[in-house]
Length: 168
Image 1 (cartoon, rainbow, N blue to C red):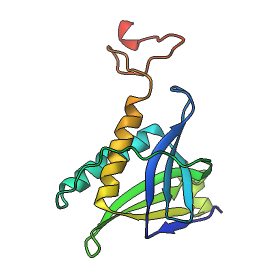
Image 2: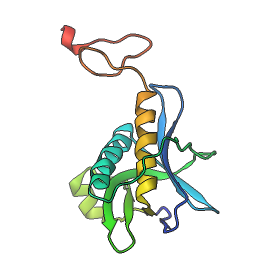
Image 3: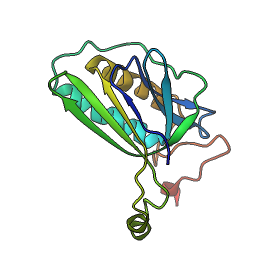
């Protein structure tokens, strides 16, 4: 079983990618002043988390939006692969709580998952609304830095060519 992490005093909260567009590995990274952890996730998970954080931030008192992009700290080595992400708000502290759960082998196969009953690792981070806003800004810039979309189907264009299903 992989190691779980909890960061109540978060100083570093970001998403980033390593590699060339079309062959990138995406990471979520959380840390405090003394340590940080990186977990691997899909591009769609980064985008979905950013979009959800936008809706959460709309319900909170006004936050000054950041213009700074938060970069990955090197080396970005994944502790484990992300399965599910949950977001909540701690009203008492005014923090946003991000809960990230490890993808457990067999989790996608319900019969196998029931028989294994293995619980994956977790990463829990308590971030400020300002840090969440900064994450959204970073994630949006990260999405724009990928391959351009096809103007017909919206799928990413490969440098080696693109077979568009709309032209069929």
